[in-house]
Amino acid sequence: MTWRVVRRAPPAPPPYTTREVRVAAPGATLAATLFVPRTATTKHAAVLILQGSSTNLRTEYRFQADQFARAGFVVLTFDKRGNGQSTGNYRRATYDDLVADARAAFDTLASQLEVDSRRAGVWGLSQGALIAPLVAQGKAAFVVAVSSPGMPISEAAAYQDSLRVAWAGRPEADAARAAAAHRALARALSTNQSSAELKALFASTAREPWRRLTGLPATPPADEELRGWYWLGRTLDPIVWWRSLQVPVLLVYGEADELVSARPSAERLAAALREAGNNDVTTRIYPRANHVVRLVASPLAPATGRWEWPRPAPGYLDEVLRWTREKSAP
Image (cartoon, rainbow, N blue to C red; front, side, top):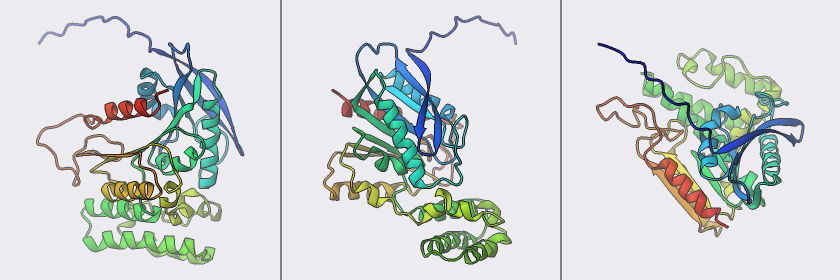
């Protein structure tokens, strides 16, 4: 076989520029990047990108920012507090801290000369979608919520860890015990049980053979972390946050989501929005797609018989851009 090297022309520059900005948040300074279409001779619609709980750097959302900027939106992405070039402590932050950070980032985006603040909205994934209604309240023109938990956070933790235990081949009883451990921990946190009692709960699972497959640590977290978003947040039911949101909402899920029970979450959030009088609610659930709306082969989405590169679910990107353009029109 003969290989031939072909020299291709360098790619054209993107149709947008970027610049670094700093966001002054309560107790932290957030490093952020602004994406501005080169055609920004008039004020543009804008999108704030809100990340998931384990993808905390703005560089991890370059793809989403690029998509929106190419579609004509001004976009802001930022490193979460305590990550990348941002100051602060992420593990000890509360959801109030994360919401305050995101609202400060939204204000920074809306204040840019190229932005029509009346047409600025929020796109969030997972944790970012969870807090999106609180960030958007009184500020945003629309919300795109991708894989937002529609159940109490403790139930999402029980769901995802029970799946991990079952998929690893452990007995069904072990999966049930993993789920029960998360629910017991949430009850203990919500009733303000003592530090010693909470640590006893962690200790009770430390030697379980299925524990290493879950998000339960072998040693109890520090008291400061137990009061942060990761643990105390499990006592929250996000449904109350959505009931006060009166802007257009697009709820997006992958049917094979391994972290959030997709269809029940979508139905519960959509019902809460409509019961509160918000009738501009659109729901999309993409077959065979996972938590980040990519096609996967898993026990929740059986293989088609041929190998495929991981790729966005067909129609997902186009649908989000079409909907966002429509809801941010002048």
